[in-house]
Image: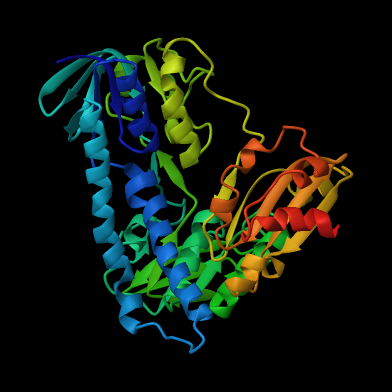
Amino acid sequence: MKYNCIIIGSGPAGFYSALSCAKEGYKTAIIEKSQLGGTGFRTGCLPIKRNLDVIRKMEEAVSLSPKGISVDPDFRNNLLEETEKYMDGVEDIISNRLYEASVDIYRGEGCFINANTFQINNQKLETDYFIIATGTSPGDYPEITLNRQNILSHIEALQIKKLPEDMVIIGGNVEGIELASLFSSLGLKITVIEQLDQILNETDRDLIQPVLDDLTSKNTTFLTDTKVQSVKTNKNKVIVSLLDKKAIVAEKVVLTGVRKMNIPEGIESTGINYSDKGIQVNNNLQTNISNIFAAGDINGIHGMAHIAIQQGMLICKGIKGHKVVNDYSSLPRAMFTLPEIAGAGKQEWELIKKDIPHEVKIFPLKNTWRGFSRNISNGFIKLIFEKKILTGIWMTGQDASEILSTSGLLIGQNINEMTILKNLFIHPTLGEGILESLFNA
């Protein structure tokens, strides 16, 4: 079978690459060896957000109830299983959209034959262009090996059938703290081990504090500036030995923050330059082989789903010789913790470290009118200005990812305080905290 474009991988980068190519009129096929959707849609980002969304709504309902409604214990026991069943719908959505776009789907293991041919299930597919979008998968630590039973990655952790009493999460990174938010809310005793001196490194401490407060109130302990020496299993327990000779015993251990590149089989036959850091590409997402491109995590530029989606949407521009890789200095980010942290641009710690003069405007969410109506007790919006120009906008609180989802558009536009004050915000919303932070200042 001959195609114009073949995409390998159906995660965020692959899915949108396939739709982009089909929109351009290219005869397109997509190849997936596992579940449609990859980590971004099926096994990682989306399911943990779904679980946290349910918990967030339950906690808000409890806080708003004048009679103090309680949560059925079965809710905690069944949440992961119910979410896993719900996530089966992801594959239906992806396959339906690809079918509507006339994209052929091939399922199974495959390998490159050469720079124009891919073999799958004893069938050879030829193409003018390949787009590699195979992403990454959980990796082992040098001293720890995943056994998928009680030493888990996020994939197995989200599929636990019976909740344990306790869990050790190795890594105080975004993935680790999101998982801590989830499992502490389900009643587990959590210990987070981080080798650096603070969790969520390179994030302002005031943004993190409400998350720390929430986790601490839910029986989470943090061991920072702490290194793990080994992890061993003993019957139904896992023993985590630390360099200071102490040990922690728990039912489950989850490794976070380590990803390995999913390099396709037979890639050597194409002549592509690659390493354990990914497949090398130029600003067009083109490899050293002119007809082969790489989008998303596999190219090692950034390991974020929204960047993978953007690269997939723009991949056809790269095929036509146009620049796709952009300046990510205004990159919007979100941490789907409880409460959430989101924003774009610079943070205080960066400016303080470089001794750059700046102004900070902060307004608590509880003091907004929507915060009052929703009985919100924590979180705030934070604006950072350099020479009266907005260079950072951040928020900790409920719905932070939604309220600041377009925050990247604001950074780098030379927006000053008066520009913001002259514009209208819907009332009542938590986003009015942006106006209030300036008005009160």
